[in-house]
Image 1 (tube, rainbow, N blue to C red):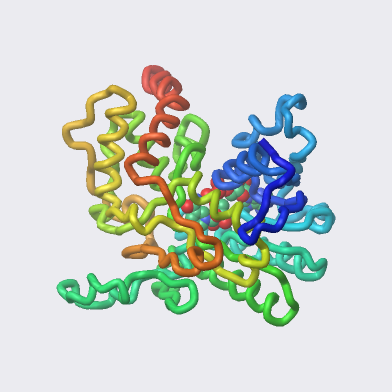
Image 2: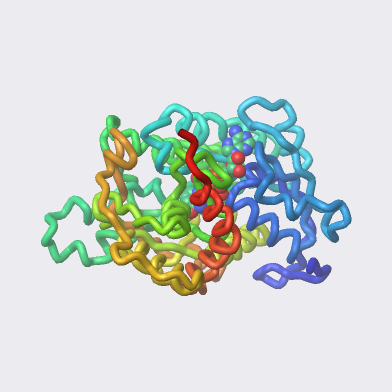
Length: 388
Ligand code: NAD
């Protein structure tokens, strides 16, 4: 619960602030709201089009933090209230985005507008009103690793110098324009450059966060249960959906891409440190990930199958995975990053943050949540006779 005598990393008392959180109703926003309300005295102006994932924090009005969170249902694309809300706050955190890979090549215009154009007024209002901004970018801005261009059998591929992603030295390597998958990464890169330039030319106080595959409860939706039946969420929810339905997990192009996954609750600790230590976080771009939880997507599928069988008590399928081509799964214009391992030097040095949770443990708590939340509802939809 909120305490009055909290101190920052340098021992100075932390003053309560008001935070304008855009995209507060999403996966990361819901965890950040929870953390701020339960463990700090800060106030939140929560902005989003939806609030299903934070309903438990908004109602009933008798909740102990009721006077510290206000929900504003608005679309930042066209709402004149935005500037006023940013002005009312000490800090703005922008999480709003289209950020599901299935959209990048199939809805590239919406993706670019959402990740670049719609973020512009937020940056402008923060800069003009001298308000601090924490902006959520992505590890996708690194694109492909240098090592991915080496011959397949080159021993240099194992050399970290060719794959570790560093905020201040790694290049951003995207595929050709016709591979529209890169629309998201490119839009995020340009907004990062704009924010950086606002800092350099106009003194904007900013922090940029590059999340590396944060996962946990409340991520995305289960198609046909709390989202569209035809919708394609990110990998955690895609695999959870298959496990809940006892269907094989689809591995795009053999599931050979490598990712490092970090537990949402670990990552949120890093964001809280940024919020409460502005003098250490301002002007920095931070990788936030867990380099020790690196697996191929195929290994992730195998581990999720084992963990789900353990938490649900249901036997795993004999053939738990099936291969699909990226064209079949994502459509024309798909492409992928080969490997994403964050360098942790800057976040260690500035904020002393390190992730704690192993992949097995984070999958255990996440799949326990998925099973408890969705198993009954999925069973009912499977049992329903289909109308002819
Ligand atoms: P999310 O989709 O769960 O949350 C985004 C929220 O923004 C949603 O609730 C959505 O309704 C809201 N939103 C979108 N457009 C809006 C608009 N025009 N007006 C008002 N609200 C709007 O996604 P998330 O996983 O919580 O990601 C948050 C941020 O972090 C995004 O910028 C994303 O690109 C970035 N990110 C996340 C990850 C991850 O691992 N989860 C990885 C890389 C980057």
